[in-house]
Length: 383
Image (cartoon, rainbow, N blue to C red; front, side, top):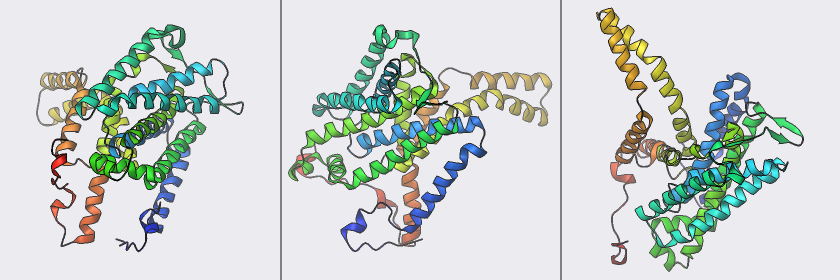
């Protein structure tokens, strides 16, 4: 365990605290580069979704984790980015142009959403973002001249400098990985800047931030715009990966999945978004395994324990019915949210920080180290 003694301000804002981070991230990046050449196409496809979900998670983390503004409408921002790319593609607009246009348009709409949200906090802001998501979903279904309504839109194969990049090719995987890496590095640099520190100050105390001269309204709008723009970029990649988009793909459940990404990974670490994305993306394969394979395994185990053939078949049918039940995925999400909120609000990255701190301070570690002190000035008690 390496101990860091910071002696100046440059040590505090360094991108990599020490050479060990450079080595570990270099090894991880090397493994990700060789992944499409050693893994099956199915696993590579899942890694693409991990990159896209993690990109959205990092964007949501800027808004929720670092600025303290809740949002359940990021599926709408993803939809705007996806439909912008699909619409402009019909006019043979080059990929770099409509990729940037998707992020720019989504960022502008995010800023517009941020203006009315300036007067809202907590549950009221959540309700406002849900309303925005429902409005966008309805517009996508009704504006048939642009979105083709509920029929959906086909998304053609991505063209890069005249060369097609199929959605299952290693090139598309590297594109999504590159966008994720740039998003994480950009976010880390943003957080080291005055803008990022203003975001954190607003999250911790709006009253204290105003007293320091921070324009709270301006930075809240900036946070919404940056978060939405990053999600718009991910929406463009999402559209190309699915090759078909329709309004029912961008529902409230998708927004909840994005919340779970930062809840599991940790709302204060861009790296945690990757862990959360892996968990969320693997839910569907897990449910498929639970529905197709687990009933047979349970029936075989029952037979081995002495159950008759009819009894084992009955158990298999019951397990299969449970695994195929409607709402099972939502129930799993609900359990995950309750468990993490109750036992690990800082997510997996927070748990890792606690483990590192435990070994650094052993045997002087205190369990209350990460608990936020509930001491407020009088003006903030009703905030």
